[in-house]
Structures are given as structure tokens and as C-alpha cells.
Image (tube, rainbow, N blue to C red; front, side, top):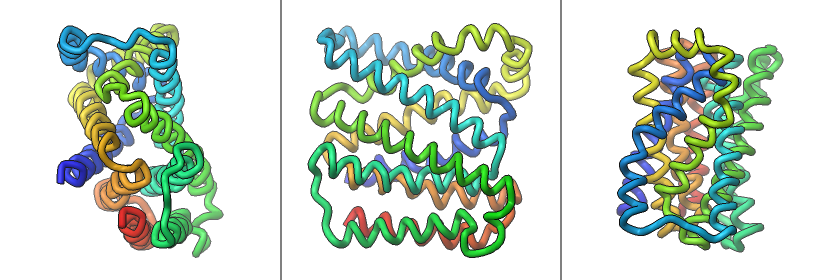
Length: 284
């Protein structure tokens, strides 16, 4: 029950903070500011954890923490670029749909998790839903904005698969704490993007002035959702948790279609529900 509840809450939080991110017109300065706020918000929790359980000191664990920090940096930068150049209801469901597709295959290949024919059927349904959302069943895929969204969705999906398998290995095999895995990527992004933030300081100030409630919400909801997913991965197979968290696909299409008035809403929603059926098959 904890796994189901954790994944459901994480899906809702993830869709909502991605919707908020879509409404903020910025790139690297936004990623830097969110990382800074997340670092500050999570620091008391990490200090408590370090005092209670200690911190990893061996090279392998530290290397995995560094690896996840790099993967999440690339993911967040690519995600924000995609949201600035294409529709939420294209980029988000494609990224979240291809993410479990790739991560499921990765979990089977690299962590030797088993898949049934029901799971294979689920993957096929996911692919069909992806085709609907991408507009390949009508002429909308020829639109340059839609093509851009498809490209970003696929690239972000690969990044999601990469960090899902990487972080899943870290919590399941290396027994690293989800709190540490989530936390250390934030100060790394702050350091990596500080020079860029200083160079674009007027934009950072504008973000702080005009979008502070959204920035704080994203900085809080994002880490909470991902920590819940990582804890679920400790007790359930990655090829269950990764697809199940993509219930957020339906939320993302609804938010993009209803609140942002994006085109081809009904077709994309049909694709989202088809992907949801595929997710159920994978979970089964």
C-alpha cells in the first residue's frame, strides 16, 4: 500500500510542478534559482540524516552521487528548454511515456529484472499512446513546434530513463539513502550554473520578484515527489515503479489542455489514457 500511495502522490506532485515550470519563461537562471532554494529547504533534513546515520565515504557511493547530480543537471536544463519551445501536452507526456519505456528496458538489461508478456503488451500500448500524442495519426506532427516538442520529449525521456535506472541501482543495490540522492544534485547544479546566473543576474532578480511563490513550490514539491519514488524503488521493482509514476501523464495533458488551452487536446488525452493502460499492464 505504501508503494502505491507514494507513487500516486509523486505523480500528482510531478505533474503540478512541471505545469508551474511551463508557465515560467526562463532557462538556466530558473534552474539555478530552483536548485538554490531546494538546497536551502533540504539542508536541515540532510544535516539531521548525517548526524543520525552518517555520510557515505567510499569512492563508489560518492561516484554514484556525482553521477546522479550530472544526469539531473542535464535533465533539468533540457526540460526547461523543451517547455519554452513546445507545448506542455506534447513534451511532458512524451518524456514521461518514453522514460518508463527506456527505463524498463534498462532495468531488464542492466539489473536483470524479469518481464512477462503482459509487460511487453504494456510497452506496445505505451508506444501507441506516444504516437497519438506526437500527432503521427494526423497532420499536426508536421507543425514545426510539434516536431520540436517530439524531439525534446524523446531526449528528455532518455534522460529520465538514465537517471531512473542509475538512481534505482543506487537505492536497491548500493543502499544509498533517497534523501542523499535527491539532495546532492541540487548544490551541484548551483555550483555548475553560478557563473551563468551571475551573467544573467537581472533575469534571476526578475524571477525572484515575479515568480517567487512558483519557484518555492517547485523547489519543495519536486524533491518530495522524487524522494517518495526512490523510497518506493527500495521495496518494489524498478520496472513497476518507473511506469506507475507516469500516472502524471494524464495530469500533464489535462493541465496543458485545460489551463494552457493547447491544441489537439482530445487526441492527446486519448493517447495519455492508452499509455495509462500500458502502465497498468506493466505494473500487473
